[in-house]
Image (cartoon, rainbow, N blue to C red; front, side):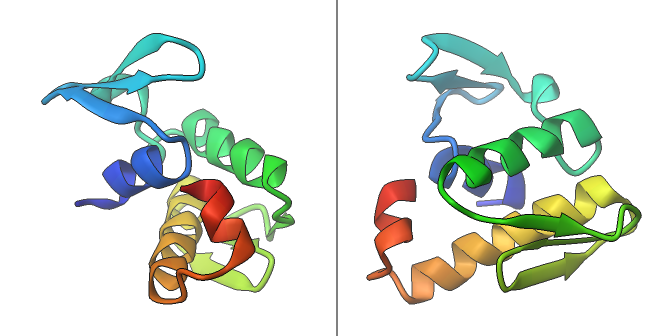
Length: 107
């Protein structure tokens, strides 16, 4: 599972409907792969920020290439990559420590 797929599944709760699109159960809509590219598109990455803030995470950035959610900090060539990397690191860490209260909310 790549970063985008992990974020779509674990943070947004989307399911892969076909090889090229996701289904968002909350909104009842299909999302094409090209319409969710958070590593390449800052607007898409900001959707991750909004979602994690809904779950109580605090977002911070240097505005260029570093992003953090609470204690998870990541870098990227762009801010969009940094946000995606931080979110993916959060998923990986919570998978290792799956008993956290917030991880249960995300899943």
